[in-house]
Image (cartoon, rainbow, N blue to C red):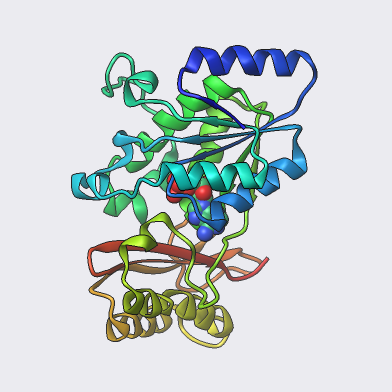
Length: 283
Ligand code: AMP
């Protein structure tokens, strides 16, 4: 694996590979890698000749400075995992390399209403920050495929919209959520949980599955209330939302239309660690 810290070096190297006809797959991450991230690398290797992974903790997508400061950093282990997985290129830029003119931007991405619901409501500005960095990284890598995880479902919708706006030649591939045996979705933030909290946090996946099994026979409001109470009793400190929603607009649904594709999404705090997860209900 070749490691680049400078954008120009990365661009020159990729230009050379593209001239040779290589298809490029790209998986952007914030590091503290786990098997979920590695599944994106594997997906990319399956589709492409060359796989690029970036590790960059993007300051502009954190609306909570404590969350940013506490974000885990495990570069040596990340490099080990990527090399083992056969990743070809790691891009590890500094903040000034990505934002040479500072992080303030006048670019506004028109993402529509999905920007403001669920994660957008609880983390104002988050998705503009995500778009700012993904746009920058796309311009540097210009991949054929962009590989992202369904674990961050709303982010997938946002990134698909961004790609339509700024680089429609890129094919966005969504990779399934990789889970612990307990069902807990793998997340870099899980390292901030102790063993008991990790066990308790599996209640999110349990409730997603419960809703998937019961949404055809129970009221959606009642299911959401049941899941919220269950999570609070299971040890969660706060539940931001349990939402059964249209899988395209993410608008909450109470009575589904015939053939409407539905998803259930949950965000909740286990101690001061905010966890998100989702499950497609049909289709
Ligand atoms: P992050 O480092 O958390 O920004 O995530 C980088 C990429 O990995 C995003 O596309 C995530 O959706 C994806 N990802 C994170 N966790 C998982 C998981 N458990 N399974 C699959 N993909 C994941």
